Structure formats: structure tokens, C-alpha cells
Length: 287
Image 1 (cartoon, rainbow, N blue to C red):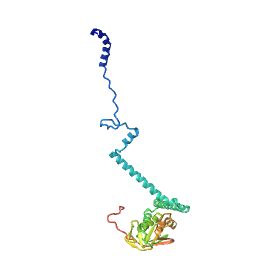
Image 2: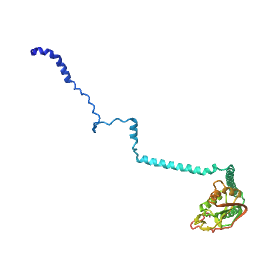
Image 3: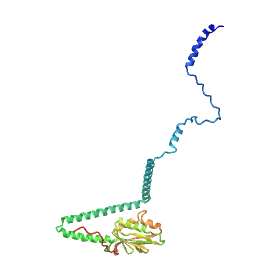
Image 4: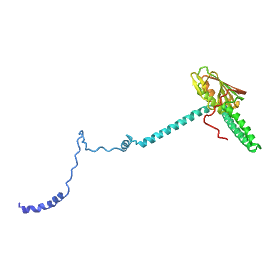
């Protein structure tokens, strides 16, 4: 067969071959690797699930300095609130377990304190009225000044005093009563309206301090021996209940195996005196 005879039969195939040469060569699919072969470092890691991405984003935590400061401030605030709630719970726990009679007595004591403050207010207003209406204001002012001087002398402990009140005797055979317990008793008596207090021959004033000395107690540096005896001038109906409130002074001392005896009296004499100290620098500004 000649070449001329073969040409017509190859022409249809020539266009097909030209088209295949113009198109990109097909890439055969990559055969899967056999199991058990090791993967190279260029292989892609398997896709993570949503939960895995969340865990990876949260741990390990990335804490900045500002976040750390805020966390510390929030911790301090929470701790302070917890301490405040705990202290309020402790202070009110005694009242929750108190009997109805004790609660009524506490309310009566609060009413008495309110009444004392009202009486004091009315007294001061009366003094002001007398000064305003008196024909001889200078003489009235001198009288009130002298009376005020006596009152301040009683508070300062420079003059003796007498009046109704109570005597408190504390027997501490075990030697477990400390200075802070006696100080609590003084503070309760003052809050109940005590106007003059004397402890074992030592006058108690605003600047009085108590301290422990071995198995005993000293008041303003003066060691006092047992029994501890308080002479208190004030309204007995207010002073005695103040010591006997639930969780108060008497119960605290009895827990330390001490005995407390409270006796009312129509006349209590507080005769222990203190030397009036002259100020070194302060001078009166009045003419």
C-alpha cells in the first residue's frame, strides 16, 4: 500500500492528536500509601474537632499582667465580703439562740439608752433656754460653769462621787481572767450609762488602760489583786442587765470558771481620786 493511500485514513486521527497536545496532561490520582509506613514531616495534620479546638484555645491559659491584677483585686474583695458576713453571723448567732425574755430585756436596755440620750438633750436645751431668758446672764453662766466643773471633775476622776449603782465582784480562782475581759466589762458599763467606775481602789477614766501581769491584771500600771471588785455609779436597772445579756460579760467570765456577783445599791461611793495633770502645751483659748 502506498503513502497516498494511507494519508486519508490518518487525517481524522491527526486532529484528535493535536487537541490532546493542546490540553494539559491529566494527573493520575495518587495511590494510597500502604499501612504501617511512616509519614514524613510535610504531611498535613489531621483536622481537629470543635471541642479539641476549644480545649486547645483555653489551655494552657494565657494570662496577662492586667488580668492577674484584676483577679487579685476580685479575690481580695470576695475575701473581705466573706469575713464581713462571717463576723455578722457570729455577732447575731447569740441573739438567734436567745430566749424571748432575754430579747425583751435587750430591747428594754436599748429603749433606756435612747431615753437617757433624750434626757441629756433636753437638759442641754434647758440650760440654753435659761441662759437666753435669765436677767443676769453672767451670774447664770457662772453657776452653770461651776456645775459643769463638778461634772467634768467626776468624769476626770479628780473629785469623789456617790449615788445609786451596782457592785460587781469577780472571783477568779483558776487565774484565767485576763485584762481584755475586764476591759469588756468596763466598756459594757460605760455603754449602759455608768458615770463613775472604780476597780480595786483605782479610778477608771477615759485614758485608763488594763494589761496582763503574770496571772494577774494591772490597771493604769497598778497591779490589782483578786477578787476584782467594781464600784459603779449609774442607774442599776440599766447596768445589771448590760452585764447579763446573752454572750455578754457574765457568760464570758463564767466560761473561764470565774464567778460573778452583781449587787444593786442605792448608794455607791467612788472615792478613789486621780491627780489632775497640767497640759504642757495646750492653753485655754477663751479670754
